[in-house]
Image (cartoon, rainbow, N blue to C red):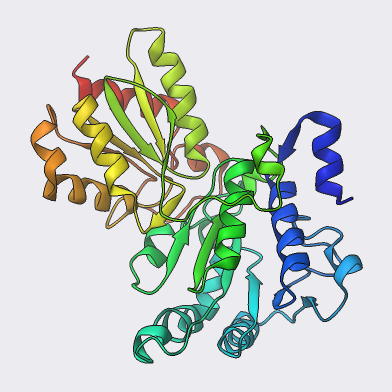
Length: 340
């Protein structure tokens, strides 16, 4: 019995890292073409213990420790995918994926199109994305908008343990390259898991958002760690009679525009929340899509974005806190949108 399953049975909840571990374990067992490679993923059990126990179970051929050379091992993974395997390529942080962005964009994302559909590249690029705590400018970037800009990639950003398991299994089974953006600060957070999610056949479709909280006054669209912030803000505002509808995007590319539009047509107000920079961000794309679509005529006020501050991340904690969206910022933005 996997360690993640034991954890679930003891507590009734599962941490995000254990859900990711369980997803990889089940897919490694299901399909012998699947393998994991990256820095410290094998004997050390992963920098964040996401791959705990997998090397002991599957051995050196399926769980592969690599040198500290992202360009090299990402290229190996892309080549393996082209040859018919299904690699899971772990970046210790997505900030390090910048060393390999040519392989991700030019080799993985464009090959299917450039080969007229003859050559698929079934690969998952996964690891922690966005700001952690106290790691400053070079290790605190959100890459959701970076990778979602590129046709040929699917970009996934889970929040809960159930998101993490179901979406990772779907990503591994997908015949396209998938960028799977986790969050370091979410790894140790426990979530209730449905009985359905314990099945080895459980998956969550890529490209489908989830309404985490029903509401009638304002639509709040977010992803990853900020789903928690938005739900907390919604709970505070509910005491003041403001009912927020909170949408967990789950997938950044392709965006579930239909779910967003249906909600905006109901609430007539839109607020987007993300940890990335404001210019050309995920929220900017959502606002543009709403403006260009049928939901625009239902808006009673301009859409509002809550984002990270448009600066490189400071190291000092108080400056870092003020560079990222806080619950109070979300509440203030919602009240501004509703003019209350």
